[in-house]
Length: 190
Ligand SMILES: [Fe+2]
Ligand SMILES: [Fe+2]
Image (cartoon, rainbow, N blue to C red; front, side):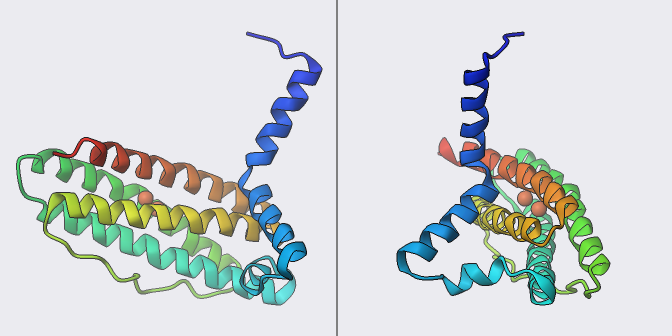
């Protein structure tokens, strides 16, 4: 194993901190604060106290509705997909479902633990018939989900919900993989 010298190690840690999602979120807030006054939307997301808790519950419920949407979307696409790649895509879409359901479980458990009521309706599902349009709609949904989880993680940290922040790291890693796989399939789509 290569041993890093102390200055090198510090540079590596500092570089990692620069790109950490929490730091990115907080940095963008502080630069906006000094550049053009506080941004009301972003400011709201990092509010602490009882208002912050309500906002966190509302945000987690938005995330939960999107996970329910993902479960339905992948189920529909797995059943509906046609064409020469049906078997591969059917397997791919179907294999996403257990992971998205697990995400829904994590979010619903946390909303309930925070004293809220978990959302019971999905966000609207984009229904399309062509395989490529399915992959594109799934990619769009995964990217939007990923962006929300990066923000939600900063919100959780600001609220002192470190366990939730750690769980969101797992969700961020999962959704990044989903995004990357979808991008790889679309990159050479005929
Ligand atoms: Fe998910
Ligand atoms: Fe996903």
